[in-house]
Image 1: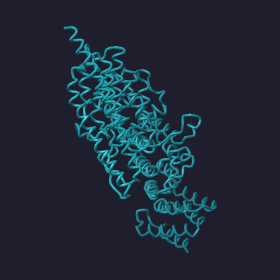
Image 2: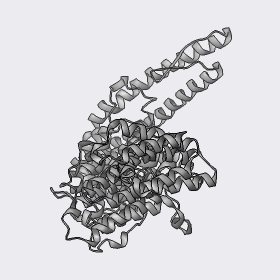
Image 3: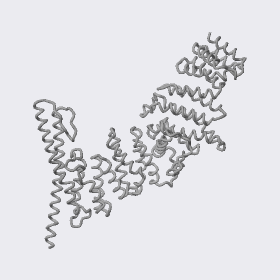
Image 4: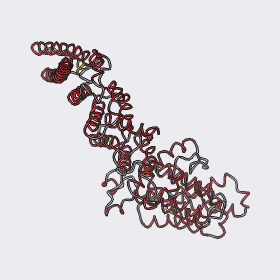
Length: 592
């Protein structure tokens, strides 16, 4: 019945000119053709499509059958039937209006979700490539539209992270990336083989946009297998290699992008990108830098004349982009890229002037955020190691400037203790090796003003700030022992009165108040333990959540132990100060 109905519609349309076809004819043809497909009349439908008399009808209306054929291919597993559907699809692609086919195929690609996305992309990439190749006009626009549609769908697929996920490729992303490269190659070759054709400039722009989009997704978040024998079988790494190869082929090799770095006119300025696409460029460039410098893709193209400090400067902005992201797979790449750049530089050789560049200060601040907020211990430790490596590379004035910046911005006791320990190390080097004006005299005193004080005086939360306070006391103890009070190298002894007023006396008062508070809390907790009632306990300005009384007592006793530790170091510092000042007084009396 369906075949007869279709033949009737075709017979009526055969006597009409193409421009006389009505909208009703299109609708009837599509419905009858779809019923033929659903009822299994594949052979008859193929015969109708191949009939030379129906050439005009199929060219004009046949694209409406592509959707039903594709859906049958997706849902039917029987090989015999699938052969018929594939033949029908090939015939439609060959005979139908390519402009209408292009739009129809892209609509089909946009329809699915989940695992069906990769299935339909893998099915339609070859027909889509054939259709675009048949278009004579606006090929660049068609290629751009197709690549944009494909990328939008691929960006919805989860990126596999582990080796097992890459190998199983449950959502088909890796297969799609491999197929997408084969889809794009003919258009890249068209640009490279006919460079004189001005129309190819538009095609080149579309390919450049696609490359930058691909660098952001999936390559920004993609994890790569170890660079060993398995690297060649890593589909995402192969995809990255091909994308970077495409950039070179269309006239934008990575070295050219590096040499354009810092110029007002960027490589991509002439592209008519929308605002959202423009925002993607920073992510794309960061991804590209990681692929070249860390993964070593096409790194042999880089000229040897580029200095390590220039390359670090180039990459710092990209490292900043990585560290601003919250995904572990992304900001971990920032740590790797930073390490790669710093290891090329000799210790104490990175000039302080680099800190005038915004990213050279925001990157260490980003490291601090990872150190203090990241839930993954290995990445916290890696960030700490990178911050120390960064400090080691700076010259003395650079170290001094960075220490001041981080003391003012970190707002974390542990980080401040780490910086104070680094200050102590620099002072120690100045004592033992060569005089360093940045960690002696007036410059050091200015830095100590940020270290030897309590942010809120005696009211400072000593438990929360215990790491910083202990580091400050240890630094002060070191200075009192090392520095000669008669020939002070640090300037400490002249500032002793200010240090006592701003730091030592408020610390004494704060310790007495804190110990009294926690001792009262312990008595309260012990009383509650006897009565077995619930109570609230405040530690560090925050109420301890409900927990067994024994655990509450442990927390409170731990706090008291911390205060005792601070108090013992404080007592030792004051004892040393008293011994030194008495000794100096006696020497002065003897001189008189």
